[in-house]
Image (tube, rainbow, N blue to C red; front, top):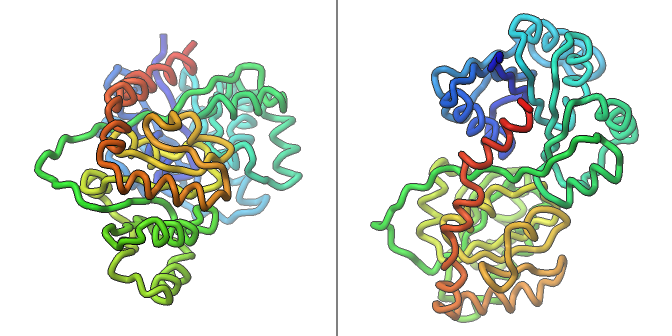
Length: 352
């Protein structure tokens, strides 16, 4: 059997989708599979790839619009004809329809993966195209059971499977000493609601014994810096920017807090649980409820209930025993989402 697989993505720049794709690509080549990553927009690669993984990208700049999409379609068709994979897996709701059309043109077997929350709003045109084209794919991978039910209800495809994101490998760093730090990670955008987290943290830490570290960058940075300055808490709340080695902060911190209200499968939350850290997060429509066992490894908070979030965060701050109980089962979580187990599920699905 031909064991050549293509993975199609807009780019391999920094992001949760791209991280998953890099883990899967590296797993595939170790199984003896020839792997091509076809980037539709940019060749820039932010993740370490096995030297046997071949990355292909267009030489011309993506223009957007109908002409840009046509350019992408022609490029993808050309590469699929040259490579002739046993099957290919396309990531990204925006470009999945083009991948399906390319597969119909070239006669290749195409699987697709949706990465966003099922409540994410797309234009009427994008929804109409997906409804017409998605059923033509050989199968659809989503990240959560809720997303699977949503895809089935919308009749996007008859072959839908929910596969969570794989965990990366963790290095044990016993030399790093724990500190009174609450950590959060994410792009500084309004949907992450870091402004709420700042308010909640300040109220929960009424004795001023803790620090809040927020890792990430984005358009809300200036507003958050201004808010921190106006509250006079610059010595307690720190915007750390983009950090390559997030693990060192996960190991230093004692609590992970997450105020995002729209997620597909938040990798940062999953990695915090596996690090391990006690976690507290809003119960947004998809993601956290399939990672957090409320009261066991952390707390799920009803959306917009800032008072309850504050109370539970204060409880975690004040109780070392509770924090220890929350991380007691982290090895089982690591095993459940191990990259070998999850990547095998991906491979079995697209090479069935």
